[in-house]
Amino acid sequence: MSNDDTISFFGRMKEKLIETKQAWARDGRLITGQTAEYEQRLPPGQRLVQDWPVLDLGVHPNVPAQKFRLDIDGLVERNVSLNLDEFMALEQVDSTSDMHCVTQWSRYDNQWKGVATRTLLDMAVPKPHAKFVIFHAHDGYTTNVRLDQFDQPDCFLVHEWNGKPIDRQHGGPVRVLIPRLYLWKSAKWVRRIELSHVDKPGFWEVRGYNNNGDPWLEERYS
Image 1 (cartoon, rainbow, N blue to C red):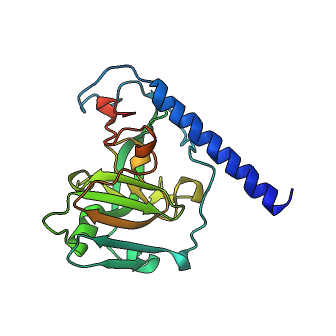
Image 2 (tube, one colour):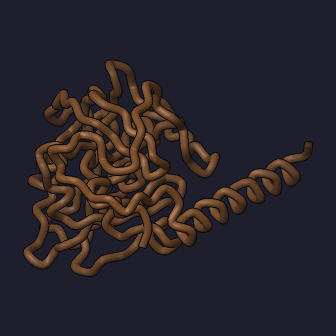
Image 3 (cartoon, rainbow, N blue to C red):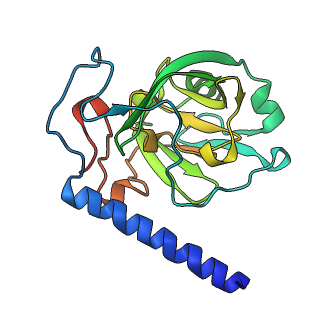
């Protein structure tokens, strides 16, 4: 298979996956119509798994350590730009949390290491009218959350999972972790964190997925 044929093949596969997931949104796939309080550990409609499934569009950007860069900009008092050594030199925190994917799986007691989002926000200092956070990934993916959702003690930019570096297929070297939202909000391969006074729905949000993504409210789709 030639390079052009390979690119065309993976392009078709990506389009098919996107179409399938958009159809799930139109059909309300997996919706139970139930809600629950956060104290109920397993959100409505979820099932427990022991592994960490890989669910994406089949593109895993290669971000070598020497090319890693994290920018924090937009409505901030100070633009922040970190290479991987600078990121790793920040205070590192161990945490444990569950994760919940919109495709119905949940995994308990994941052990992470990374930098607290509050550490990064303290460095950048959001301006008073900053209300939203837009994540930009190395593969062009974007997703959005409210600033108050990102500024929580259980939110991190993580580089280790269960004692090992997060591998490429799961978003390494560094990905976002917002445990109280569906996992598509925790952008893989994060490159830039933009603070904004206006909301900017991301890749899946403009394709039928809920703009908020709370698993306990079963906010799978819009």
